[in-house]
Amino acid sequence: MLSIVIPVFNERESLPHLWKEINHVLADDLNWEILFIDDGSSDGSAEYLIDLCKNNAGIKLVQFYRNFGKSAALSEGFKHAQGDIIVTMDGDLQDDPTEIPNLINKLETGYDLVSGWKKTRHDPWTKTFPSKIFNVVTRLFTGVNIHDFNCGLKSYRQAVVKSLEIF
Image (tube, rainbow, N blue to C red; front, side):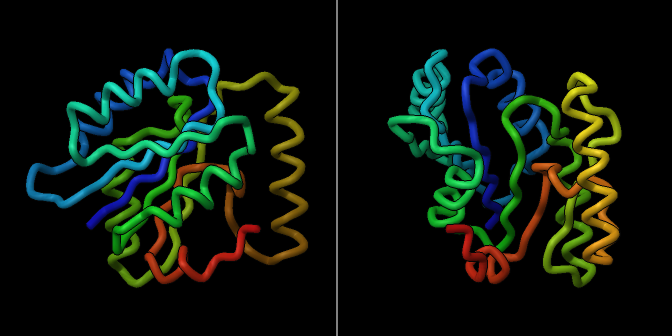
């Protein structure tokens, strides 16, 4: 089974397109679940997701009563994920769902975790510049050669996710 964990905070405008893209990518014969973790949205995201869950058995929603942050949302999604493979992605359309099969294929070559990379970010320089500095410094100190440590698009084997201690 494939679990897709998507933290959401005030993403109402992007959710219909995100669902359409994910639905297009998922193979008919693939056993999957999508876990949306609503992190205290106030823009109608939760209401949209509640309706989406009613019409799609594979979609589940966990709602936080207030904003706890992305780490808390991911942690909660990991607790609920049933899949042997778990994919995480952001709900703001900056992660391309068509990359999901590539992430899964890479896992199947023997990796335990595969990280995506935002080649093009749709953020102001005030976010991209500090991110670039963070990535360079982190690569230097850790020796891990990842282009974008903060990219939300990742795939994990379940054993890796279950071993993480986020909080």
